[in-house]
Length: 124
Image (cartoon, rainbow, N blue to C red):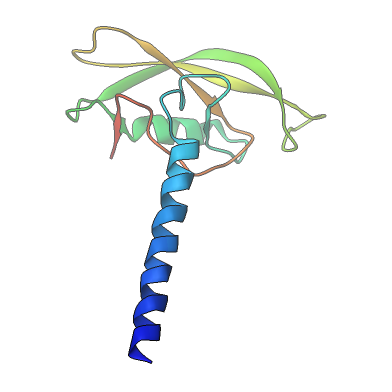
């Protein structure tokens, strides 16, 4: 009985660890947020969600991030569109003090998914 419980407990921990790792590997890679093919999905058709998300970012040493919306781009199909089946991504210019270059992050307000952190940033 004791051996069975130990085996079940060990198996459960192994399965949970494997499941967590595969989700993170599939979702949060080097292109996360940087590519229109892999945007940050903040959902709820609300640009305020993009602002909240971007405000949660910091530089790698806690630097305050600044950002500006550059406009909409990159039409894509989504079942959550307001009209028809097409949506547009929002493109933001993002930087922080001491950063040598400016990056562009793509935000999807139509679809929602687990939020990650783009490479080179941290989240509060």
